[in-house]
Length: 221
Image 1: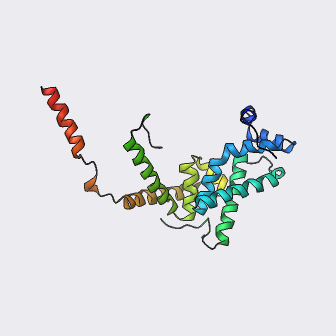
Image 2: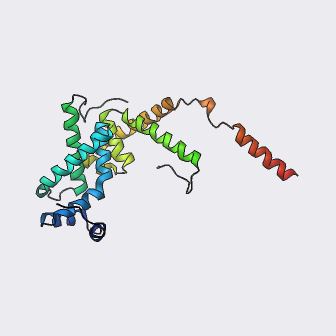
Image 3: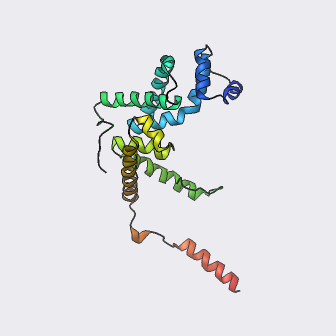
């Protein structure tokens, strides 16, 4: 199976997942790349939520795609292809961490709007965003296994409650409960990791002070 050119990928991009699957099963095996490129981010995030390691998540992705390709005829269309594929990735990730002895059951009950961005962020904001992203990823990694996977699919990947429940084979009520716990834990963790204190918020530091003073005097003059 060879890599498909960009033009060919674009040609097939309008097809649904199910149509691409049918083409692959009909012998156009190279088109499996369309499915991989289309869903790489979702599969990565699902795996990363469980293994908590970038390289291992990529290994899980590769094996999940191999497994999906090998069992493609078992896809019966009762669920969305992406849901089916994500389950394969989750099962592969779970198998790895269980084998390593570092996972409690996914269905345990361990306790505990996308941010607007400026069209042209300045370097300071870019650096702050990168630092904040690191803090957020660390906070997500610290979540209990069950809550972390729900948070990744629901909050980061943007699945609906119903889609998340179907993917993880949980009830919608369980998804809502775990998402609520995860959000609270992430908020708490972010404050602790950032070392924030109420007294230090909304500071008006000297550069801003200087700028305002200068602007006021310019208008007075």
